[in-house]
Image: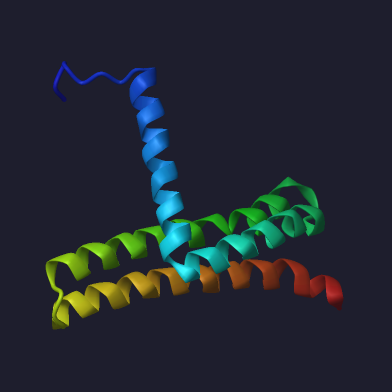
Length: 123
């Protein structure tokens, strides 16, 4: 790593600003991201409330955040692919489909966590 790379408070602040710009772009551009944020706002406190103990609370509430992270990565992949290949391209389409599949798999993971923890209580 070059010795002239400054890793001080200014770079941390800039990284934070860039992250906020990314979140704003996700909110403004991606309807799926907006829906997932709304679900997070509703389900995160529900997960904290329904979880018995720290581990269940962490699993219920924490299973929501990776979905948002994957949605942001998927949106980034789609933006780059659309810029580089404006016309239909098989490999570009595959990259976009795989990004979407990653979001889907994390949604399935979230459902498995919630069902595994909460359904046994109903019976």
